[in-house]
Length: 310
Image 1 (cartoon, rainbow, N blue to C red):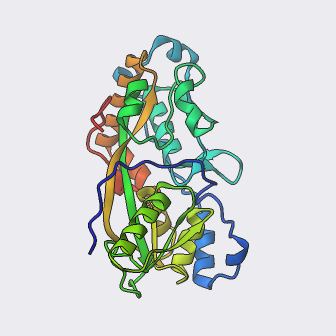
Image 2 (spheres, rainbow, N blue to C red):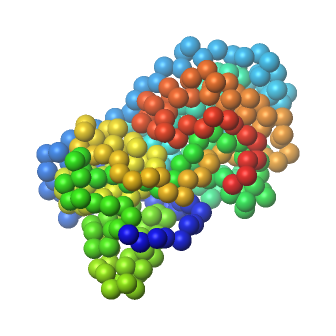
Image 3 (cartoon, rainbow, N blue to C red):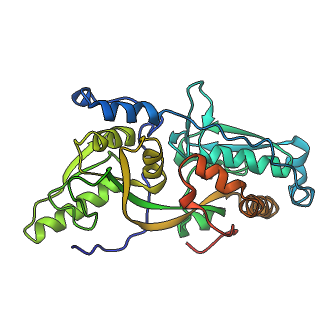
């Protein structure tokens, strides 16, 4: 088994729609029936009933007056990262981040609206164009220098194999294995580095299967064309939940890090209102219910904080 240098998880977001799309590369058009079912199931969007989440007056009172008078929280999100945030079949924003935002709005007595944005342009626009950004932002020191961040979720890198692990795959020793992932992601970058380490110890390099979406990668692992899926833990969990038993998790989550809602530094009252609303959702069980619907309750955290240590 190889040991790897620990690195801070960083997601490269300049990628196509992940599990939100069912597009297959032309060379992969002939899938097994099992993988076809997985691809179709990956497009299913769970309906989460938030109607029983009531306004909490003492938390709502923390909202800055300007936002309270407007009656709406405006969110900027890059809608290309299922299951966090992506475009639904009717063109609306969907995902667990979008449901969490709606739940926050209910606690604060506010409507919510999500505007599609380029990921790299969200932080500069928070505090002017947007009140906040909930878009699977990893909490890190660089971002904390520019904005405030309110923690609500934890994610890292995780793996899935065909149910039963028929190829006896060990995530800690993938030299010579068919590793399926999405092109342009941190997982691809990390796999190239680890593949080079395999060659340094005279073992076969990774057989990298880089697809245009995580949906394609998951589909082909379920169908036996890949040995193992390597993706962000929310993506892997969502793929497993939608696989109808054709995929299972394997190994531990690596490089786990907090995700946070981005708020302008000059809006400490809004940051505190969001923190209090998130803590209420955690304590009341609503957060777990939302995340479980998306197959991601493993990402639950017990406590929401403003500007937590990365």
